[in-house]
Length: 201
Image (tube, rainbow, N blue to C red; front, side, top):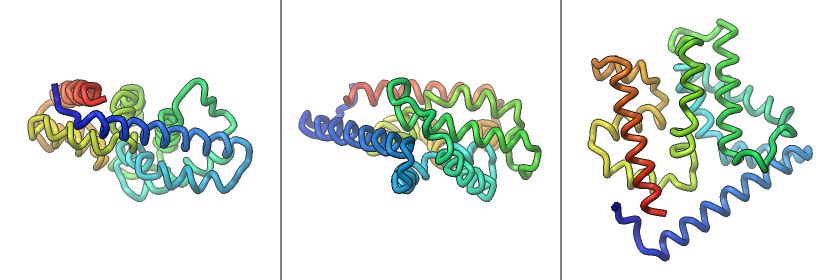
């Protein structure tokens, strides 16, 4: 079992995580009620995470920046569809961002670095496990601690995929391995990462 630190530190981390989730949930509720100031607060709390999702799908920083702008414009218009009883705010926003990025792919106007639409849809479907671990800012310190327990190769690929925006296909090409092999490496790494995070709670 990985040492997750002292009980007091774990309690403090859990309290901070809960407070951050509740803060974002309250901001989303205010946004749904038409409070424009809440949009800026949601943007500041989530822009890095949602940009990473857009970049991973679109493969181009300018395209991802444009998609992110679309995300928040659409969010202002559709925040009322968020139901806090059915999903955490960050999970809902991650799905929202993936859908907006895939919509841009389907227009056919995205530059050459993007994944094909048929590859993007499965990527979006497979992403929630990874996103729930890696885009949740409240857990970021513990995630980096747990990443350090993985072998160097696996940790590097996970960081590249979920923090730097590389697609599985790009990582497979860089490592000169089949796409399926890369997906398996990352899947097994995420399973170990989840076990480490659960052991530290």
